[in-house]
Length: 305
Ligand SMILES: NC(=O)c1ccc[n+]([C@@H]2O[C@H](COP(=O)([O-])OP(=O)(O)OC[C@H]3O[C@@H](n4cnc5c(N)ncnc54)[C@H](OP(=O)(O)O)[C@@H]3O)[C@@H](O)[C@H]2O)c1
View 1 (tube, rainbow, N blue to C red):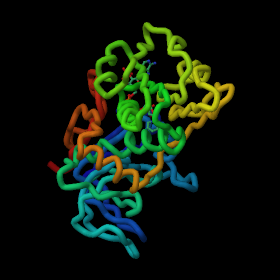
View 2: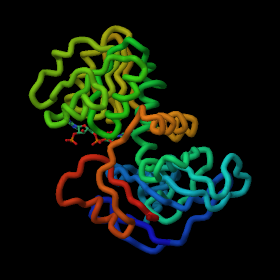
View 3: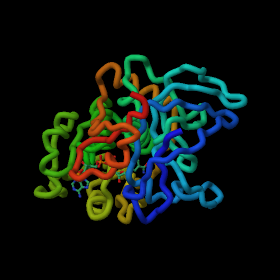
């Protein structure tokens, strides 16, 4: 099969190449998925799981990309819950070969059915940002109606979904980002916007929940904005500063098929949308991940037209 592979950690996305690889086999409780659309996060190329397996053994050449939408083409031994021919989408294991390929082997429990009226391209754009937003807001942040939520990077992949879900919950949402992202954040439902380049973050006053996707100085200053009993949720690594009288949680997104069902239902009924930027073929994927100019939104690779 055709796949994008990486062998050199230092090379970043410039080291990606299109190659021929043997198709994967579905192990116990896996399904083999014929990939129609694939999502990739550039940060993957800095994660140890891209280069070594769970025992720390070199697993290069590895196939990046951990989001997919496609069709089940085979079942592994003992696999239940999915059937051959079913449309699926989901998040694949960080330490196995990924989705920038014509086929991927995935544990069935990590996938959910992709309804027929949701395009494969949209399906592949949902797992990481959708699950991260869901888990950060509801599981770790325990957001409640009436609370105030400060969402950093509210025009970005994760932040835009956090903003939409927090509004749906009945929270008051203050989005942040660059000056140029103000209108996008407001369009996603933010009721106020803090331009991190020109406004003073501290003018926000106290909030119940901060969802931080930026970290560093922004993360440190955000800890001081949390009201007593509030929570700082971050996906930008362990926080250096913690709220004086509240919780600080950093986490890495996990696969969850029940949450994927909730997310895709919201896409179908118009409550949620993602920002898709460039859509390219597998043959053009290396160029798409090494753009000559900045592309807003997620790049999706259409493996099959
Ligand atoms: N821990 C986890 O499980 C997990 C899961 C998903 C993502 N992540 C990480 O979370 C981060 C965000 O992911 P994403 O997909 O939402 O990325 P994204 O689509 O690039 O969104 C980030 C947003 O924040 C803005 N931003 C970043 N730094 C800023 C700054 N200093 N001032 C103002 N605005 C700033 C970006 O603006 P510009 O585009 O103009 O920079 C963009 O709008 C990434 O580092 C990603 O690797 C972690």
